Length: 182
Image (cartoon, rainbow, N blue to C red; front, top):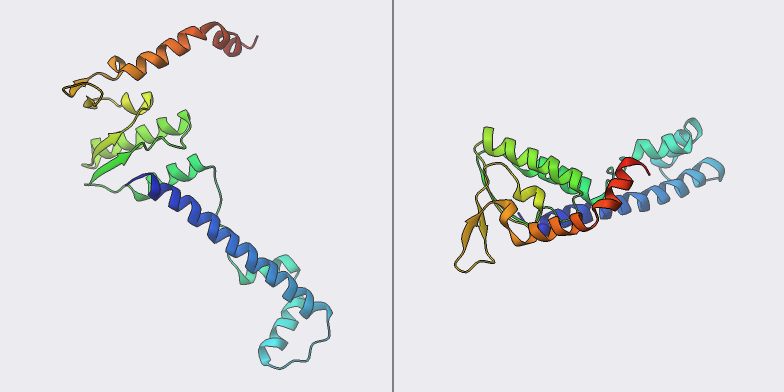
């Protein structure tokens, strides 16, 4: 499973919704034509549509003929929904930067999902990531690929964690002000 799977899922929902919007526009025109214009009925279907438009509002007519749009979430919500739907029990998953497009809140939700799947459903995960959240998954075995030779480390020993730490330490006063409501 890679980033492309997630992005393809997001794009396919958008394309599907665009197609439904195009269909909806055609149905709006059809409704107006059958409801308000004189039509020469060339088929039983024409008569049926005409009767239906006279007995329904435009929105009810359209809803009866086309599905609602797939609910569009943010990319992060859609990605998390994708993981929730696609990750099955008793499997090995290779995830390449699954944190892409996930907010910290959703990264934590992904951690919970991964933790439950590995603990209760016999799943294993190999994850390439820079996310401090994902790196801090309990009992994760982390290989520092920046070391030669490659060695295992704790998440807080990694170079990019030190960079995060220094960044937040440098902005500690600003963060305290915001968090305290000043």
